[in-house]
Amino acid sequence: MPEEKKKVLIVEDDPFIRDIYHVKFSQEGFEVFLADNGIEALKKMEQSVPDIILLDIIMPYMDGMETLKNIKSRDEWKKIPIIMLTNISEKEKITESENYGIGDYLIKSHFTPSEVVQKVKALLAL
Image (cartoon, rainbow, N blue to C red; front, side):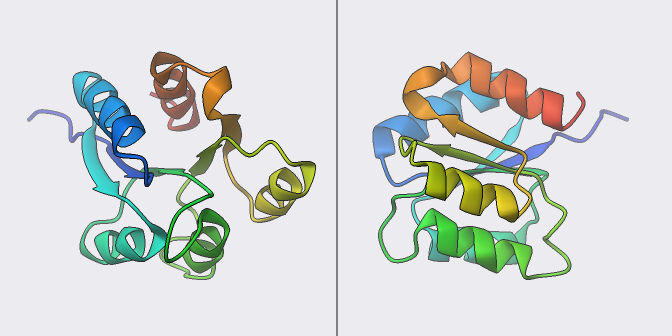
């Protein structure tokens, strides 16, 4: 029986960045789910629980910090590893998100999509 694909939820409002990560994770054998804001992400999670989440901070309707708080407040979701993938390098945001037990905090401009995939694989111990 083939091994089940790991599911990654990419929550990113920039269609260009979202597409780049969609392609990269698909090529690496992940099942990819996309959301362009926190509200959409939570709806997707009701339908299919991801193995890991890449979460942007600046998004319309519900930003990444609100989304993070929502996810971590639910027993069935709080153990899902989350990587904050953002361009915000403010110490307060980093500290606040770390207080919620995130897996990593990556500044988009500092990492290539391939490096982000490697971080995800390491977090999932693949």
